[in-house]
Image (cartoon, rainbow, N blue to C red; front, side, top):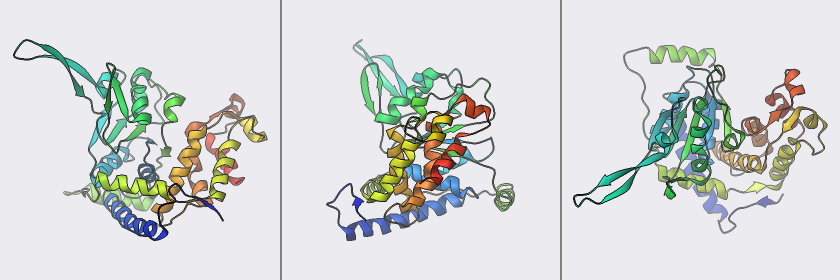
Length: 334
């Protein structure tokens, strides 16, 4: 079976050695997070996959499911400079990006100086992102795609690595502004956070209500994270996996010959979804200790990668269907 290799100059032995070293680092990261976050293995896996793939993630869940705690823990464990912004209706773009202030020196000369906002961090937590106005939400668009911001016509590069982990409450929609499709597409994955199982919740009760509470410790550096991200982009992708990605994404678009999609989907995912699936499949393979992704990776990642990049028709919503139902049907056809 032929494979697609991004960098053919990389030898097999070197790739294996780098992967084994990365596996050890990823294992230490998982252990570090597991000391603080109990249960939620799927959420931890998908969030780490998004970061290892070099992208951003949207965390959706009801209050009290440790969304904020997870982001704070990731910042500590990965050694990244992290900031948190609480999104509110009165938040302005300058509150995130920064602004220019006029200063006067001892000679009376006036000049503008740029004061960076909280976006100039390696890990930005956008808490309850859908509570801010569309104008403020759009302030993140350029940074999430191009990794720099423009203020008063001047370009300001963001630190590397740069990741946005945004949270959203699916229950309370009054006074919120749904994220536009262009911004949703910038998120590599939408990660739904469900209630913990009974054993995890029992451990939460015992571990977090005492005198002392477990604290996260740093186990990785941002520079090492960037090295692992480069390694993932060099991993080979089998042709069968490439064909599965193309088949899945294209079948989710109306007008491509899939009768169910034509009936239930108003608009489908673009090429950015294919890119996201490819990167996330590589990252998940390395996360599981494999050197190349498989079809199973595509099936496991289809829902978090595609669900926020699709919209149902009115008839499908009237029937009580969800995007997850449509994606599940498409996955069965791979």
